[in-house]
Image (cartoon, rainbow, N blue to C red; front, side, top):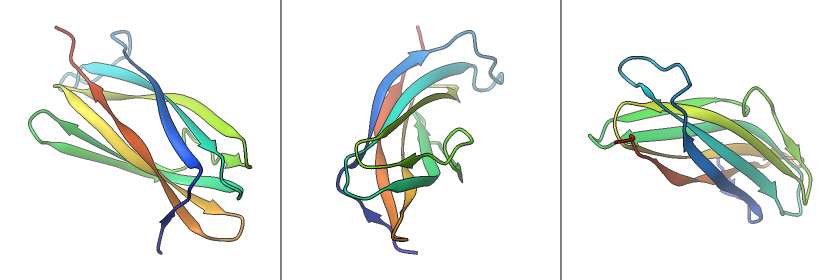
Length: 124
């Protein structure tokens, strides 16, 4: 399946915060909450069907996370609508995350929009 970027469908990373209160595995003890908004200013209605995250740490190790929907939902965004949510990543060393959302227009076209890179710095 070929994906195209849809002008007007965009993602903003609204906030990234360290969350020491979140339970995390011993090898990745630092949790960071991220707050995202997906906004559709395109002339087409889009349903977000999936996501792909790539988290890269300071040692060059990468973890790829792919899945259906966004936080268990499949947001349908008409022109001018947006969907905001938050989730988290857990890391062991300084890392950054980036990725994309996969969507489908009502006309059946597969579209993609990029998630801007954001940094997660382990507290001193």
